[in-house]
Length: 68
Image (cartoon, rainbow, N blue to C red; front, top):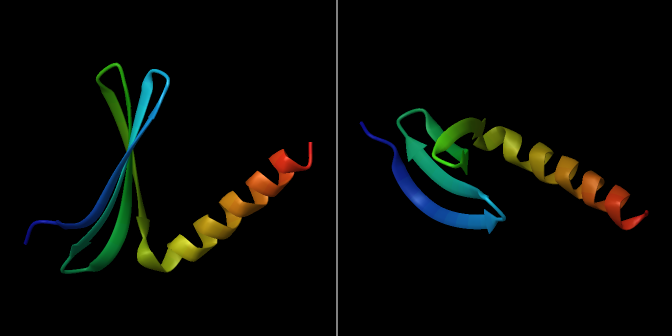
């Protein structure tokens, strides 16, 4: 079974483009994060059970940035 896209977001930041794709397959839901820089792509996969931890970690980083 192919991965089914549930939600996709494209973010452009300078010469980088990020694709955030919430997908689902027979093993469950996951977030696929792809970075494209001049045609070169790197991807990471975060299983749905790790999304809250990722969200909290990003919040901690943003809090640190705001505190500067």
